[in-house]
Length: 431
Image (cartoon, rainbow, N blue to C red; front, side, top):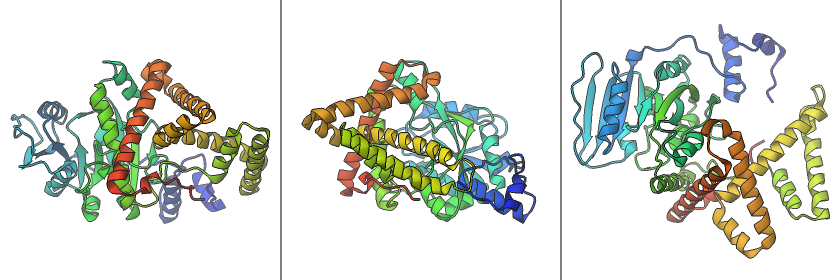
């Protein structure tokens, strides 16, 4: 809930606020930073002020496919030690393609940094060689830079292949790179906590000022960059109106391995950003009520209801100045509780699945609860995304659980390698 002074509220009027002076700019900044408003910029930099940087490693076919879409743009290809040095065929018209080569692979972060340093324009668009931007992708994102505090904007990543097999249909619906349809500010603890580096548009000076991507990281370097930029005071935006298609892995072995690889990034992130990588962030009252209900006893039911009633009384105090504070508090309590339960179920099947497996083996009661929650979580997720993938619930739930096992396995492997349990510590969300 955001409290505004009467004069600030008057500026919003019918739900729109036009920035015309310092006063309206201050109100707009607060609305944007809190996440209750989204920008509609009227000005945008020129397309000529953007250089496209493509890190490449052994994907010449993908590069040629991408370059065919980028006609008219200035492009820097960073060949990160490919087995065969990349050769760019001459192309007519505007737009120059420059190739930089690392004689041995240094990693995607180093390749992006090399392109960032070589660029001379005010903005740099990073595109991996396995993506294909859709029409208008750049113009939609560029407008956000009319705000001088915006350092980075990311498009929505959609599937290049959404029909070839069942796994392609699942990835079309539930890709790790697709952050959904809702535009948002990017905050470490927000709904959109980071954006993937497969496609990014950035203010070059901001990235150079923060040292660019961390070249020591082979995974999760995009998350690290987002959080460092945010800590430095920059704003970041997720713009799903811009689409970039990604060539997802749809062969099972490659798909499972990639999900596992993503999971290994949590531990190094935990060392760099303590407290931000928690796999489970749920209010104490939600955990307590859920544990009491899970006892399936009369006293457990009573204790859970008392816990929820206590939380309702405390939440009602926040809304005392509004009409119907009890009703509003009850609505938010119900939303918060069920959202917390789904987070618990998801973490149980994903981040903490080895612990859950041991508990299932040891206790028949826990086994029933765990199976019920695993099925309920998977079916609820399928129902939420049923209109976009066309996959039946049985296969969808099976892929969802394998997706979670792969990521969770990578998470635990990363934790063991790093000898740090920071990435496994649950946390209580800040007030």
